[in-house]
Image (cartoon, rainbow, N blue to C red):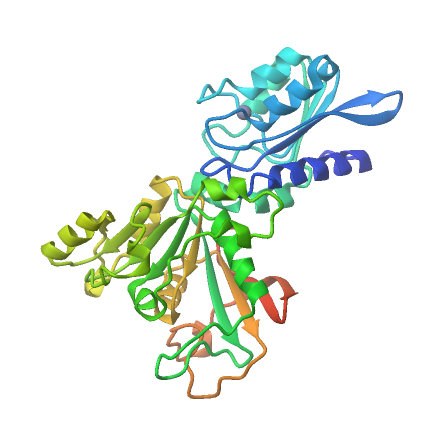
Length: 380
Ligand SMILES: [Zn+2]
């Protein structure tokens, strides 16, 4: 295990900060940051910085090398992901780093694609460059949890967002519900939508809330929301009999809308397609949509992160199927009483069936609290 210095940590932290600039725009590519550091008589000096902005365009390393220009020679390069070694839409970064004559490359993590992991580092080593990896790996993995999961399993990282009262209820027994969380929590949900490749819900939630599930960039709290505005996530509605109303808000901008159904009448499919929505069939047991097939399908469509914004039934089914990687629960300071509906439809009868969670973060968001947890058996 390599021992990294304080300077190494500081520099990688800066590279991670740069990578995060791409949070809303690099999909389906990973968010990557890179810095080029020259030793200035014992004092490290950053001579080049870069981050990947969008797919099809230059990678982080190329931006950083360009800024460093001739000062890249003999420099140390910090990059949050192993440099690529294959010819994709852009030439390989490993070649560019070798050509620039850098001395040392430190990567936070290896490429998560098992078929190419280590190749970039190998190529650099062949060019006589000193290579190391694993510095701040945990932070680097967290930034690209979706990309990593898709590369390793073919399925997206699923984040399930729920809102509840302090007594764990979400709606009255009648189904009557309304926003129980404050405006800050709602902006926070906007940021989660914006970083996701797809936002998914069930037809029941569409019927109740008539949500459009779009990203409203001005609500993201960014100084420049233009990058987030470029990409609206794919909106996915699971609707086993395809009974969604043609008047639903989500169908008023049908582009980028995918309806997944199980056993629809042919005329309903035709009607939805005529409105401009895409309709696919993924039949499962008991006339329901098969959730595992849906996730595989979204993985094939290069969806890294999927945000599940749905009711208790779909959330419970997804959790039960082992498809939820992270639960994000907003807790509002209200009590809704014992007749109100539960957070998840998860009819457990024995303690042995309980779902064990690990709370990874808990913080105040305005007047609400946000709890982030992951099922203990989730892919990490
Ligand atoms: Zn590259």
